[in-house]
Length: 311
Ligand SMILES: [Zn+2]
Image (cartoon, rainbow, N blue to C red; front, side, top):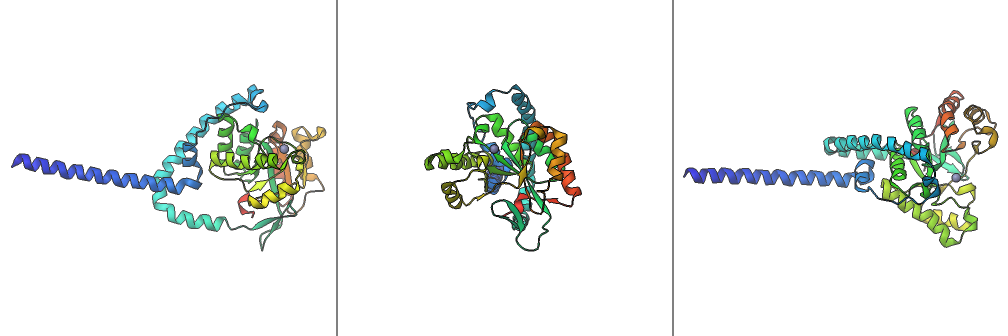
């Protein structure tokens, strides 16, 4: 009799444990599904192992130092995010979805493939910041500075910077700091020198690669040297992407390759105006000028537009 009681207690307990186990698993699955578009979970599942074969990534000791530091920080980020997701996602899932949809309502569009214009009533006095040739040595630091100043930007990335774990990690870092990731081609060649097939690979392979790493395909494209072709424009429509050139940029001219001169010209140039599309690069002096540039633009009355708000 006593023995039977023990057994039935055991059975009930075991049953409860199994039931709890099922529930937990279900909750975790829900989280996984819900996280397909959010950075944390997706990144954990995509620790791709790339091999280093690009010149850019091989020839710089500085790059390796930078990435080592960044990797530790990001691991922390991923852990934090993961915990947050598990604790909060279940309760807030529905609310968050509603809010996200509201946030993503586009307020601006790109006019003539350069200028940012309001669709309806949004303020005109905005400028768009873009950082090309990322993530090289300074992209993550630039993203941290901009994040700190609550200024949005598009980082136009190249596939040759994403051929090893360091490069992938830098891309994740920039994305997780909240920045839009744009396509700047796999290997930064002049598209007009390439066959249609090669152009397709330059653009679509990078979309695939970026999606593998951050879980999201780029919406924006900037051609190397601003050279677009009839075929690349056609491809933009097929891939549902918006291409853009720029209103002005100076960090590739010898005389502005130092922070002070660059900071001044980026704010004082006659080309600054409503909706201006500002081109900068992943470079040390541009990184050093960045805070002053954002402050100067704001002092002149311009808001730094959030790329999330652009169609
Ligand atoms: Zn470039």
